[in-house]
Length: 384
Ligand SMILES: Nc1ncnc2c1ncn2[C@@H]1O[C@H](COP(=O)(O)OP(=O)(O)O)[C@@H](O)[C@H]1O
Ligand SMILES: [Mg+2]
Image 1 (cartoon, rainbow, N blue to C red):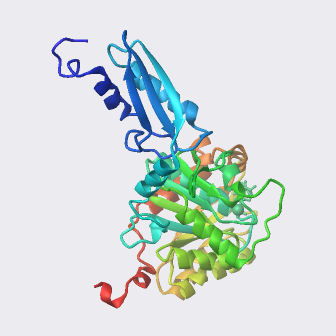
Image 2 (image 1 turned 90 degrees about the vertical axis):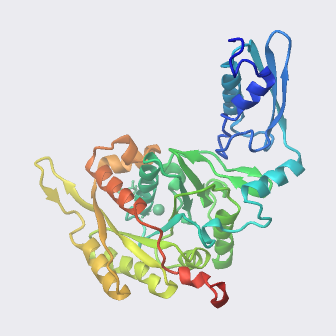
């Protein structure tokens, strides 16, 4: 240490506590010192330091990361000759306090994105039929936005065909802190899926009210933190979940995914036009599987042409607002393979034609101001 320097003159235990403010809980993504996780700091003769850290829950999957980060932060200090991290677990009272702190003091779970003044853009990804690439588009938009530095969450609300965890490479369950869920984070994206709550290989047979409740839980009980963007991967068609999304998230906007095929486009248009009933906006249309580029550079239009533009035009006419065709994503082995491997193509092969289009779409969605569609539903006459 440098005698008389401003830092060196402070007691080592103080400097250890300051150093610990740089350690961030890997799940909650806030400093452990703000979360009440640092139980004790003891400095022993000779410069050995023992740090007591209380985990939110026993068996926290990230505990080795925490031990490593705490050790590294303290070891870097002058005068420290060794670090011991003693793990404990928060008491139920501490957890309760943490929960209400994370919820901004609110006792009961509320859906943060439905509160007036929420700055999170919410996009519900819809399609008429399955297999058109809705989940691939969702996973890639999320990964691209996170890669651009945004805070992004994804809810896989496709109860019967959940595929988001695989596409984003998530193989972990959310961590439960009593009634609060900390979502796994992969490629910088917070991910929650119905697939995380059903035993593998078991069919999900849930009806409307149960689906509504499950979605409500995803939105309210999960600790999302401050998100810039929340994406919801909806089941195909115009089912109960689409209605629930509109009710639970009145400010959400719909992004329609279709292939160029006329038959797909017709049902996609129906899925999009649900917005007229729910007062949601349609942010645009993404056409997927638009063509296959041949070795000679020509385009083979496997599923025909024009479906995306057609859906955009028709929805625009129905809704009375311009609905843009945001992009045309070609058929590309890289898109499929990346999804299977759990690293979306915008990250694994960013220069491929498909990745470039998906990145452009992500940027145009992220750059918009939050949609106002449906917001008036939140206002009562006396609210001024
Ligand atoms: N542009 C594309 N090029 C090649 N394969 C694609 C493309 N988009 C999607 N796929 C593949 O098509 C299948 C269906 O896509 P998916 O995103 O699961 O559709 P949905 O969610 O609409 O059912 C997946 O195997 C996916 O990897
Ligand atoms: Mg899907």
